[in-house]
Length: 329
Image 1 (cartoon, rainbow, N blue to C red):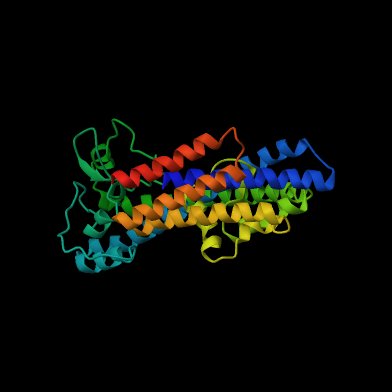
Image 2: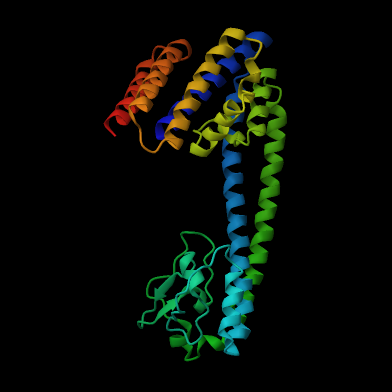
């Protein structure tokens, strides 16, 4: 699917180049300052994605802590089944019949459903205790969060078991997360305001570019990619969905340019056919191989019409490699 992702990005980038040229030609306007502005927009959209990711991680950590706090009184009363029922509320699927395996903490909060869903991270304290991070009351918000080296668990440090401090520790962590979330929301609002201001300025760029960006929003494609960078696989499939639905939403910015529109329509159609063949056909028979050969030949014809000669050999080679790969496998 990396081939599809690469070719999809090439088609979009060429479409964007043509749209910008048409706007400049038709409006007799070329504003060099827009390049810097669009680079700034790209950076802001990436920053916004990071901020949203941080907020999502905070929210997830908060839900985990609240669930753990709900388990604690049940575990203190030795109501294991009731505590496990609470644990399972965190997960949509929980079919495990395995027995609960406790860590070295006096009161282990975790159950098999936590282990199956990857929420059972543990550490070894400097004294050799093997303890779940959550049973220590530590909160890992980001994927890179790790327990420090040479960490001594609270029980070893104070002589008290986690039954004495886990509830208070988690409640304090909830307060910290709420404060951090407020800061994140402030950053998110500030970033969105900056984006809105620059987008308003960018909207003056030209009618065709505005249509292209509107199409991206309709197709649920991150508008940051308009300002540079490559689409990932999911975004390429969103792009190809308008081909599957036969709306060609992404091409409405050039629908009055019949020849250009037709070139891109044929290229996207071929790309959609190849993509669907990769996704739907698990084992290629002789008939499938013939069909793939036809698709690659069609892509080669479209490539001559769309892509500049300087980059065409690379596109042809990619198509050839795709066909060869199917033939060998």
